[in-house]
Length: 447
Image (cartoon, rainbow, N blue to C red; front, side, top):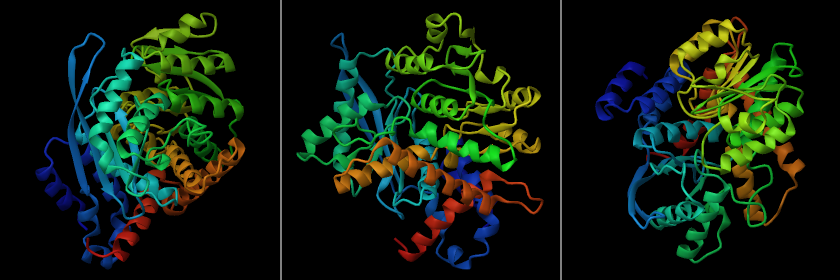
């Protein structure tokens, strides 16, 4: 495999799809040496097949807003690779959603799902629908219209979407209600992230954040350090950051920053349970303003408009909101402020320049496909519970999640340890995820 030749061909076929091409290049550069040790991969053209999705669905979504006006959005589902199992990946509702974004997210999802060691293929979907400021009734009507177009192409043994940015338990409920009506069957495995009581799993809303902190805990222990007392900056205030705040606090760390599109809230004394609970109120409000935290707790939170979480001095930085949110200049600010560990909880949350800066500074950096795998891992556990008609307790799910994240961390160390003893977590995650998928593709023939 020659990375530059493959990338030149891809750039000609997919002009302007920067995020997708960036994700592919990162993986190919990580796996090149290992790949070239397997001539059977080259003969079967594993990489050339892997970088292209199996299929992409694009469809119109028409719905009626609160004023009786007809609105039209675009919906998408990228079914990327099913070598390991039925397609699995979230639905994202955000005004910036487009095919390139979903292709990069779907490509990343292949390796993330592979790392869990569960039978999950990779996919992603969503719409350019913006839920901010919408009423529950508008969101319900949009979800129903979206599912009207998607339902024939999903199912527990075909494709099982979950939530993502802009899609939480409320949206999954509306989507599943429409699916059940259209499919005329109560097949809870068709969607994950459902509410507990009708097919959902305990710990699922918190799972991505919990899993991320379990991974960070191992990164910290790897250096002989401990989580107790560590200052953590989180971007975002949705389910991911909420789960991370809960688990970090449980482990004795101190969450000192939350951010949103409007700015950052510094929490000088750390976040407490009342503030953690209020994060759910903020998420449900559809206002998308972190300033609400400072308005609610004026003595505990200080809001600075237009700034990011990375301005606050911290030991651990965890981007939890959106892709490419942490830029090279942010990385330099964090390094100057003495950050010791960085974990990319959002998918591709750091720009390439930022990752390079952290690695050059010898700061342990955990990549999103490994760090945020806890969400899809728990979705896999939800599917297992649906199939077996069982309900595990929260401690049982949390214990299984903890083991999966420890196993993922160990694989990253196995494949990412360098000759000088340092660990390249990005390389380790990419190789570990790729090898399982590549061997499955090889075994299943040229299809």
